[in-house]
Length: 376
Image (cartoon, rainbow, N blue to C red; front, side):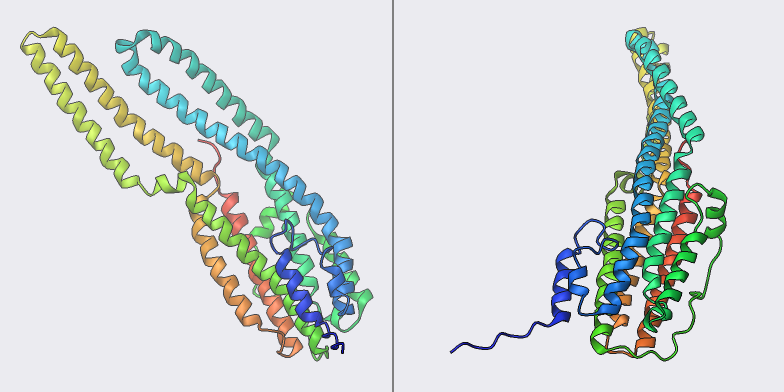
């Protein structure tokens, strides 16, 4: 006797595929693998499919450009910082190298000249190419498109089946987005805070329980949990960066610098004492030791300035703290959103305010990077 086949639960199937796909690159923007499992929910399926065709393509172009300019900017910034700090350290070190190791001192002059030239070129190229501005412009454009996709799913016209009005709204939002090379509009937008989403009130909308649950599942995995994973990984990377770790050793660097100054004073005293004893050879050695002491006392703060510049160029320390807080905020948002059993207007309200939070997060990120200094 054959047992009856167990009916397939479309909600459980959708969640299974969302869980299995969440580690995929661009999981939040590329819905191609999930579209078949959204078919039991036609309104959500058609909306996601249309947004994929209309918004995701534009987002992909902006995202590729942002990655390209970010890599270029990071390379120029790091070159400028390393060469700037390296040139200063070599210039200081030559004070002690000339009397003790004149052959090496002669070589370091050429090395210093090469480093200075490389630094000058990197800063000049960075200022003229404006890779930092291009990176921010393209990243801002791509993030606005990401926001638009998920904000569109909270628009009442979609769920009232006013499809043409909803699509017109999305098209108008795309037209109103600033170009990725419009730096002035980017700066202006970063200064504009908002306490409202700008979307019309949902009113009374009747949606089937399964569609409500499918929307909540889709939004939780694609948006909230995906952002939580991103904030968590970025915060962990920032905290693990050597520039952030060394910055926490500022007190030790200070005391070590003072120690080298005291060592210099002691060596200088011993050099004078040896001169009084008419021990010229010992006096010469202690004078050299004293000079290296003061060189190290000068090099340590310069190195610390370089580390600070490295960290400040990408605001690593402040990012680490910010990402930790935002990870917790996404965890709370996931809990508050619920399982889809709430009234539909309440669900849309949660989606809208989650998007408002992420919009404000992006403004904060822009303000942070707009103030960052990428060379010393």
